[in-house]
Length: 265
Image (cartoon, rainbow, N blue to C red; front, side, top):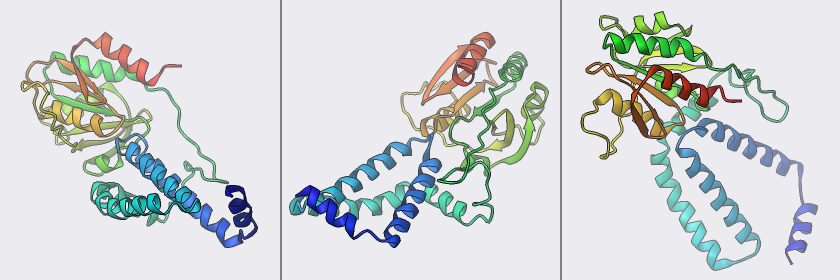
């Protein structure tokens, strides 16, 4: 029966159906790229799986299961609009960008992706952290992975400069107008400074840790980024990954960790 349904559907396949499939695949691909590297990607994959299951159930004419899944999807989409409000806004802004189809770094079907795969230059980061730790200069550095953290870059001042220990020290110097907030680094460039990050609400975090550390944890809870923190009170270096913070880190340990995360073969 399933084979007969498949063959009859294939014979009725039209050009407009092919265009429909291509457009849906394109939208799903762009949504995946937008959510890649965030905690929302698991929800996105779950939604796609439920929709595919619903369509299969409809084809097999399983009325009861189809009605249950249909009701779940119709109600669930209302809740998802609230949950994904920042991502939906970012996606709509992306579609409205005049340079969207001219971006050389994208790939879909006949477009080529031109990604920058340079290894992270960890030396200036660790050197800057060591110097700032010695002088008890507070700092918060976020290192991007698959997600470019555009929603957080937009909250700060874009810089777009090569990484250097002197520049990082100047940014976080107490009297600098850019010192209050986070620096975001991607592809060996400082993209922005004075960025606002989400603060973690995890009640298990040590109460001795301040807002800088909670913000460092918060961004790693929502994305796959790595955060490096220098305490203004103690001068201690810490780093956070996947919502977990490691404190009392020596510069050599920080270098080894960053090399493992970004420069492993």
